[in-house]
Image 1 (cartoon, rainbow, N blue to C red):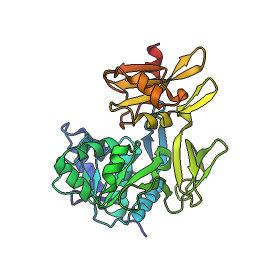
Image 2 (cartoon, rainbow, N blue to C red; image 1 turned 120 degrees about the horizontal axis):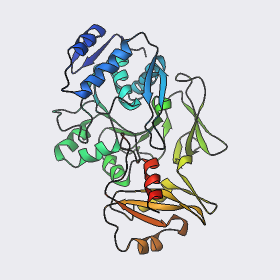
Image 3 (cartoon, rainbow, N blue to C red; image 1 turned 60 degrees about the vertical axis):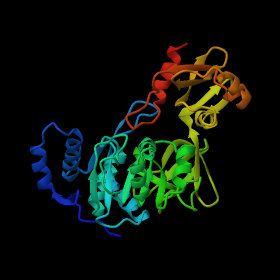
Image 4 (cartoon, one colour; image 1 turned 45 degrees about the horizontal axis):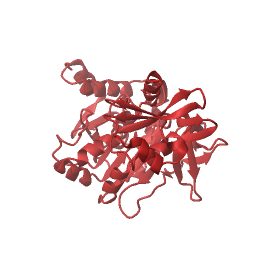
Length: 358
């Protein structure tokens, strides 16, 4: 596979060169901040600079600014297009912020592979203004969930030939709904440092899986601390040692069990936040997040932040249904759970709220 000519981009069926982008940028008004962001990124991409500035999501700490090579972004874009068997002129929906790698990579895929980019200002229901479904789209779970609640949007969602979902976990509801979809729906695994996803998990059809399969050329292994190590020679020179606790099967597929950052050490017992949250999904209908609070006796203890009123029988329910070390020692009601700009749970803010309620 060879890349498309990288000196122009197709947007809503119209081709724009670098000169067209410069002209459009000079005439922009304040009516659309997202349009301005897109033009800014395109000017940056078409500039002689070899690197692009991106920000991490900040779900476990402050967002970090990093520089990534354009050539590596091109390689990542081509790998995705090849893996999904996309074709030039396929429509590609851009509905995520351009500050982060996921949004930037949708634009790069359109440039290097000749896709027809359909930009929509990032919102909870990105399909509501569309008359027809794009061939290719990438969304966060919240956008998929909201689209499923509206009949017309759900039908459009079903018609997307290649749907990628990233930026957060896929819960049981989404898993069940998406399994019956007629076309390809994937959960993605990746991060800013890997330039979007490096592995996919099929969610739709008979071949749906509970493990991620690395893309072609991507190698994974487990570190001595049981964290995932990724090597993608066409993207970066060195291995990336993640903080994701994982297990790999005999076929080279892997499951993510949680993050080292999300381990609560309570009296010497190490408790994985994601595993507690998975158990609580069956018991709670309200949005919630698990964090920790400092404790004189145990060092830290499991703490539950729950959106809205706390059900009267909650502690009894926990006692009946959860192992002792999973039971939250503190339950805190909040009007709204803290989230990052990319709709992930803001773990850092949650921990701060828990500490302030002591």
